Length: 114
Image (cartoon, rainbow, N blue to C red; front, side, top):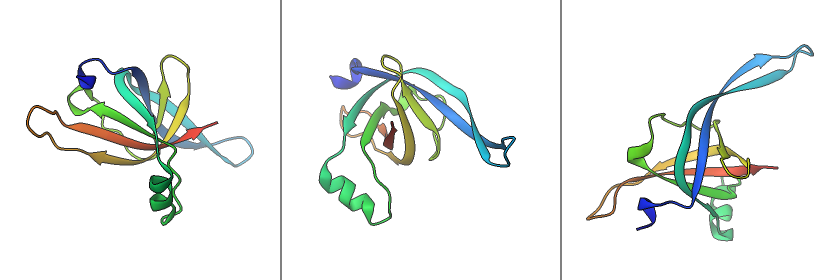
């Protein structure tokens, strides 16, 4: 099954805000958990349109087996791929439920940081 050997891996970074020398806001990222196996998928146009109602653009969804998470991600955190160092800003989180032999997943709705 896909959840036994996910094709991707990410690190989750928590974020705090501080002030820079120009009186701006400077986010500081700290590793919350690394080496998280996951599946990263691009979203469809209909998903992007649905989120546009709230002025949120989601470009990718990251699916993580709920049982492997030791950190509890929140919107505003950053996810970064282990293999290509691609960064994603977490905008929303959905918690799936287990059913039958299918385990529970956590879905991170993200916008890729280019």
